Image (cartoon, helix red, strand yellow):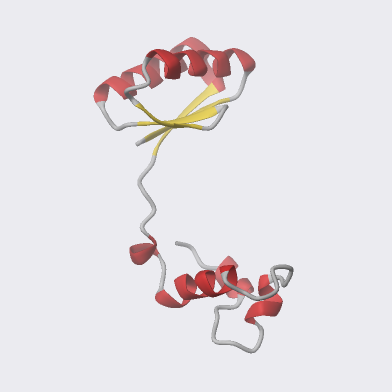
Length: 112
């Protein structure tokens, strides 16, 4: 997929119009950004938008995030356990203390 991000009001308007006129290529809209499918036509539309608005449009190629490939099991398990915690106001640092869940400082320093 391609991520198209706009940085000006005129570029946002043009992106909104592009999404309305060519909804068959739009995967998801986020206001000032949109995900479009990975077809040559969608790339053409994104490039046309960037040519019209120069530096106010950024295009990035994306790939879906697969947590089973990118992350080890302890990180996935910690996310599930933290989402199901009894006290929703407990910060993760306190939740993970004294458990086998990964330490937040260690996770901050590791690249995917």
